[in-house]
Amino acid sequence: MLTGGPLDVLTGDYLAELTMLILGRDRLKDPDLGYARTFLRQLEEGLGLAHERGVRIVTNAGGLHPAGLAAAVRALAAKVGVPVTVAHVEGDDLTARHEGALTANAYLGGAGITACLRAGADVVVTGRVTDAALVSGPAAWWFDWSPEDHDRLAGAVVAGHVLECGTQATGGNYSFFTAHDVRRPGFPLAEISPDGSAVITKHPGTGGVVSAGTVTAQLLYETQGPRYLGPDVTARLDTVRLTDDGPDRVRISGVRGEAPPPTLKVGVTRIGGWRNEVVFVLTGLDVEAKAELVRAQLADALEGVADARWTLARTDHADADTEETASALLRLVLRDPSADRVGRALTSAAVELALGSYPGFHVTAPPGPAQPYGVFASTSVPATQVPHTAVLPDGTHLQIPAPPTAPSTGPGEPAAPSAGPAEPTAPSASPAFEARGSGGGAPEGVGGAAPAVSGAGPRETVRAPLGLLAGARSGDKGGDANVGVWVATGPAWDWLRDTLTVELFRSLLPETRGLTVLRHELPGLRALNFTVTGILGDGVASGHRFDPQAKALGEWLRARHLDIPVHLLPPPEGTGT
Image 1 (cartoon, rainbow, N blue to C red):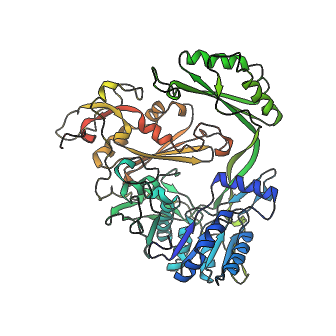
Image 2 (cartoon, rainbow, N blue to C red):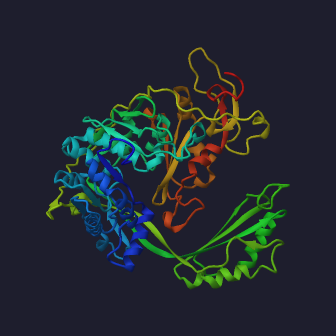
Image 3 (cartoon, helix red, strand yellow):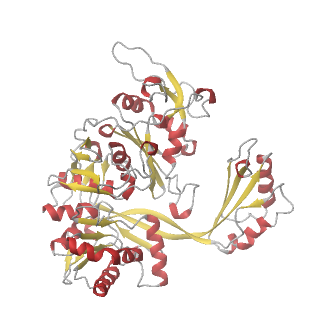
C-alpha cells in the first residue's frame, strides 16, 4: 500500500472476536502483552517509508493494551531512527466491570482517532474501536467534520466497512470468483470526498477486481438490519447507491446518517470450559452402520460428559477411484467444565477401539489433551459511562464526550437500484445439468415464475442452484450468523425479493429450522440480508459448528436448488448468445 500509489492514511484492522480472546490469554501470561505483536514486525519495514511520504498510520492493533503498543512503537521508531509522533486511544477496557470475564471491551467510535490526528500524531494506536472507525475517524479529521455531520460520517462508515476486511472487497471470498483473476488480489482503498461519498478502488497494477459485485458482497458482510448502528452515527444501508466510476472504481453515494444510539456494544469473552475431538474415517460400504457401531462402543465412556456431539459428513463416493474419496468422516466433539473428563484418557479410549471396531478403523490424528475454549457474548453500556480517552503525542489525556443521540428519524427514502452495469454474470450450468436432478433444495414448484408483468404470462422455469443467479456473503456476529444475498439485475431482484422468504430460507438450510431468522430488504443493493440467531452457539472460539464462523453458510445456500425462471439465468456456454 505504501509503494503502490498515493495514500494519505494507512489503516490496519487486527481485531476480531476470536482475536480478543487470544489476546486475553496472552495477557494472563504476561500483563505487558495483549496487543498484536505482528504489527510491530510489519511497521519496522514500512515506518520510514510512511514518514517519508507523509502517510499517517491508524491501527487497532493495540487490542487490550494500546498504551503498551504505543510505547513499543516509540521504541521501534527510535531504534530505526524515524522521528514520528505517536498517540493512542483508550477507555474501551471494561473487564473490571464484568466478573469472571477474560476480556470485556466497548466498541468505541472514531472521535478519539480524530483528536489524535488533530494533535499531529503520525501513528495512532487504539484498542477496541469499530472496524469502520479506522476510516471514519481519519475522514472526520481530514475534512474537519463535526459529530452532527451524520450523512458525511455515515458515508465514511460505509466506506470503512467495505475496507475493513481487506481483499474481500477486491475479489477475495467472492461468489463469482471464476469471472476474474483473483489469485493475488490487491488491497482496496477509498477516495473519500468532503460530502462523505467515496470511490472504492485499488492501486494500479495490483490483482483482483473492484466491481459493484465485490463491493456489494462486502457491504452485506456481518451486517444485520438496514440501520448499521455505530458509536458515532447510524448509517442507513438502505440508502447506499453504487455506480460504476471506471475500471476498478465503484462510487458509493447517497448514504444517509442518523444520530447514534445512546449505548455502546460491549464484547465479552470468557473461558467456557475444555474441548477435545476425534475424527474417525469410515471407508467404503456400510458407512451408516460403521458410524452406529462406534457411537455404541463409546456410549459408556461418554456418560457424564457435559456435551458430546457426533457429526457424520458423507464425503464418500460410490465406486470411488481413490481411497480418500471413498471415505466419510465421523466427528466427535466433546466439551466439559473439567479438563480431565474430556482429556487424553477419553480420546485414548476411542483409539483403543482400533482392533475391535469397524473394518478399516483409523482416525485423522492421534489422541490429544483437552484444550480450553472461549465463549463470546455481547451486551451494552450507556456511552456516557465509557471513558473514551485520546492520549495525545504530548501525553495529554483528552476525554472524548459521547456524541448527541436522538430517536430514529424514520425510514427515509431507499435508493434506487444501481445504475451501473449488470455485474457480474455467473457461470452457466453444464448441458447435463437437468439430467442430474435437483439433489434436494426447495420443494418442487417453489421459486417458480418471475412476478407477472403487464401482457406477460408465467414463464418457463428450470431446477437450478440459486448461485447461478445470486451471490452471497456470510459471517458471524457472536453466536449469530448473517447471510447476505444479492443479484445483478432488476428482474432478478423482483424474483429474489418475492421468492426467498424466511420459510424458503429455512427449507433450503435445514440447520436453521427452529432458530429465529430475520429478513431485511436492501433494494438499493438488490439484496436480502438474513440474520440467524444462535446458530453459532457461544461464538467462534467455542467450536460449536463445522463452520464455526459461518463463512461458508452463504455458499451452501447458493448450492441449493429451486425453480428459477429460465430467462433470468445466464445462457449456457457455447450458445453464442
